[in-house]
Image 1 (cartoon, rainbow, N blue to C red):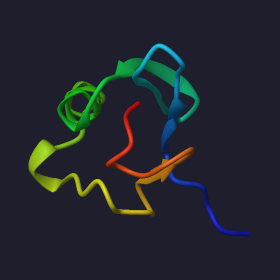
Image 2 (image 1 turned 180 degrees about the horizontal axis):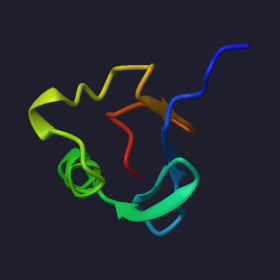
Image 3 (image 1 turned 90 degrees about the vertical axis):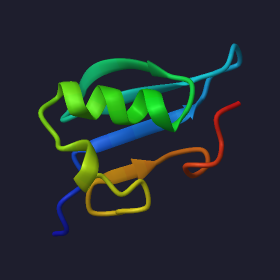
Image 4 (image 1 turned 45 degrees about the horizontal axis):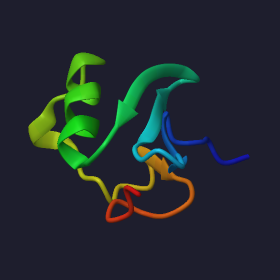
Length: 69
């Protein structure tokens, strides 16, 4: 069985922004790529190594990295 990516960016909420979870722990609501990268930095990831299109790292639900509302 394939392993799921540790980061999930959930579908946009009606009020804007997307919930971000890492290993099922809610990190917060991101309103753009900068917020997402900051959450991942706080979770111990190197921001210079994060690729938003890396499917092994991030599972995008309800649209990819260009969809925030």
